Amino acid sequence: MKNRIIFTLLMSFGLLNILSSCSSMPEKAQPVNQFDVNRYLGTWYEIARFDYRFEKDLDNAMAQYSLNADGSVNVTNSGYNFKKKEWVSVNGTAKFRGDKNTAALKVSFFGPFYAGYNVVALEDYKYALVAGKNLDYLWILSREKNIPENIKQKFMIKAQEIGYDTSKLIWVKQDKESPFDK
Image (cartoon, rainbow, N blue to C red; front, side, top):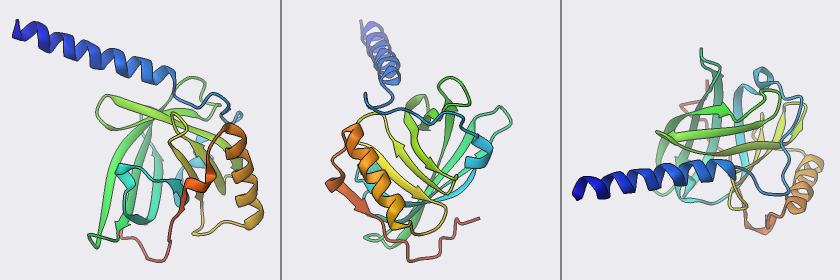
């Protein structure tokens, strides 16, 4: 009986993971086409985000992307926890959900559980608007620790068109040198 309950729970988690992978992007979001992952690799600074538990209390957040031998993308997210006064970092893997020329990926930091990572706006591979699996996840990224006002406004309008409540964005401080910056 105990084994049957465990099996049922594992199957339920597996089914939930499959179903959540199917809805890996907000309904009105469209990933960037003609995407070149090689140009996207490197360091991106987080300019703004929706707050969620994995980035709670982080400033100076950044993401670093590099290509793995199997074609997946190594992801290292880091930031400074201003309450604990310490730098934190986590590694993960991103994989394309389909065509590698479309910026629709799934990323995992916790084993077999993946979430949507969709580049929905991209300016010269210097600035990116990234939508998560639903309207609870949104990031504005830049190759520099700031972003021009015109790009910021363009991304805000795009996010609102998708359905995001941009008043919930947290504007991330970028005022420290990270020990993880390569």
